[in-house]
Image 1 (cartoon, rainbow over the protein chains, first blue to last red):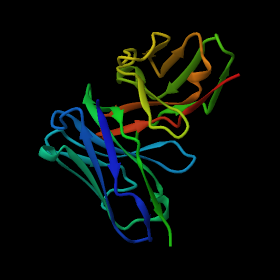
Image 2: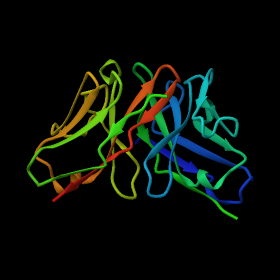
Image 3: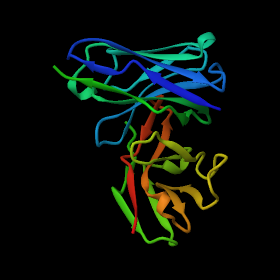
Image 4: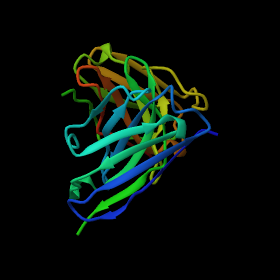
Length: 120
Length: 108
């Protein structure tokens, strides 16, 4: 069945880096845009980044632009999020989500998330 | 940047109809999607492109979108519908996904 499994979360000190991975199974990543979305404890969903289906374009929320980088390896069916300069307010569950195109890439299927805690 | 506004909470008795709204400037010109998130779980898409349902989502879930308001309607509400509901759109000016703040549906 369709699955997205995130990994790479954990506790990290402020200013350090972390790389998240998201492995897709049950479908091929290549036709889909892919998103990262996060949710701080007790808060709502916050979109983080998107990458076009072929990796030709990427966009970021203002809150992470210049610090986070999204990438994908379609043959490995894997999405990544490289996070640097981490801050306490980056603490959240990070979800990867498959994007379907309809007047833009909307998330139609989500992984279960990986928790990132930024703390000294 | 584009902003979506949702009421923080809605309460409804079992068997009644829940109406959850999502406000945005000329939102009727955009495709609106709705996702449900139960506590401790990942979000699940329940309505896409204003009013379409993914497979496996009951017909009790319906959506509409016009003017400055999009609406998610849940008919014959059940205890299992209790969750947070988020509207979201694609903002073509910024190439960003925009989420509403979420509405907590409580089944009395």
